[in-house]
Image (cartoon, rainbow, N blue to C red; front, side, top):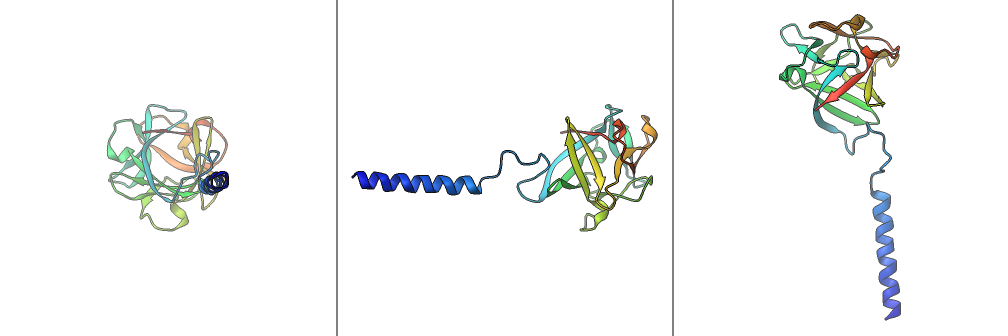
Length: 170
C-alpha cells in the first residue's frame, strides 16, 4: 500500500510539473497576448487632452482628435501580434490605423500584413506610447500639442511629451 501511495504521489507531482511548465507566465509583458488575434475595443485619449479621443473623420479618412462622444469612429479594436506589437481597427469602418510618414496625418487602410499598420506599444505608468513598426524612432503624436476638435494625429520624433502618451478607455 505504501508503494502505491508513493507512485500516486509521484504521478501527481509529475502532472503538476508539466502543468507549471505549460502555464503562461504571470510576469508576462502587459502587451503580450496569450494568442495573436483581435482583442478588446477601446477609446484612446492623448495624455495632454483627457476629454478628447482618437477619432476617424470618416468622410475624409483622416485621423484626428475629437471630443469624446462614444461613437464607433472613436472606438478601436486592438489586434495583438504578441511581444508588444499591435494593430488598431476602427469599429465604424473596419479599417486599420495607418502610418503615412513623418509628420503626415494618419489615415486608415486595409488590415493586411504590411508594416504600415503595425505599432510597437510600450506601457509605462498607466499610459501607452506607440511607435510605427516602419520607423520606431517616431511616435503617434497629436500635432503641436493641439487640444481642439479636428487636430491632426501624426507621427513625430519621439520626445516623451504628453501628446505622445495614450490612455485606454473601455
